[in-house]
Image (cartoon, rainbow, N blue to C red):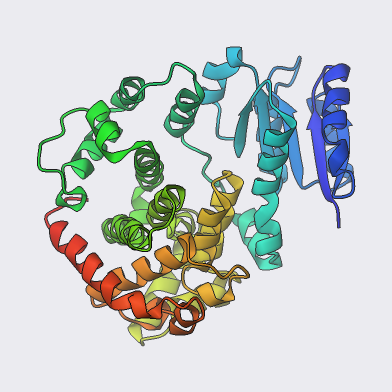
Length: 404
């Protein structure tokens, strides 16, 4: 079945250009165009679409207003906004309705890649129950404005560590959390780090991006959600899993990009729990309190209650955000890596092992958190487990004093 994509722009020549750009995808995509927000909403009311790609500045109803309506009426539709440089401030103030923001001019390869990445999880998690659950969720978080601003700065030819540090410095809460983390024993730096620019220099941009994204997700938890989840414990587990996954990927001599993605995957692998607690708190509280009282599986209780697990919900969110596919994959399969179609040593295996080892160190070795021995055997890496245990134990010992 072809992917159905709706492009929206008030300028006919832009729509014609987009159709030409996407001509090579005509065997896979069915493309429709609309000359503005009202026409797009009319089309959406009469037929289903998988993706809406809208220009930002249009007369009458602009792109943010259109995607806001699409979000309310058709939450399962992927929403992408195209914006010129002059719209940057407008975008940063209005990122909520869009899953992805792309700057114009946008190459055909970037646009194709963004659409495919955003929709990739539909093939990986073609689950009717998941779509039904997503439609019940009041608000799927959008990428935080601070994260978007850092990405935009990284794309600038004049980007620098000090400029990125200055962006982080404008967010007092984020600055405090980043400095708290970089000065914790988990990261092992002997000298005190006193500025975001120093933190960026020491940790590296990919680690900073992962921390910014994770901190923002956790900071969105309201009081009612925190009564459902032990948020401090999930934060500590996520941070440790990120460190462990990075440690394992490094030990296996993975490429730097895989090591960085392993850290971010570990930090974000339980994002689905936060979404469920924030949006379906009563039902999720029953899930968490019911099975644990009699030693049952929380994953199985999630599936019985919602039709899906937190892993799939989190992966859906990260896919909509356009995060690298291996991070989405690691989130989706971190409890059940053997069911992943792609069998290779990489982000998933590092996150799965890191997550399981962290639970084991905390004495939480229930059925949901067991290492998949058959999976590690198939990858011919089971013999590496003792070394991983030693390395992760060492990292945990160094990080026992952290305040995450």
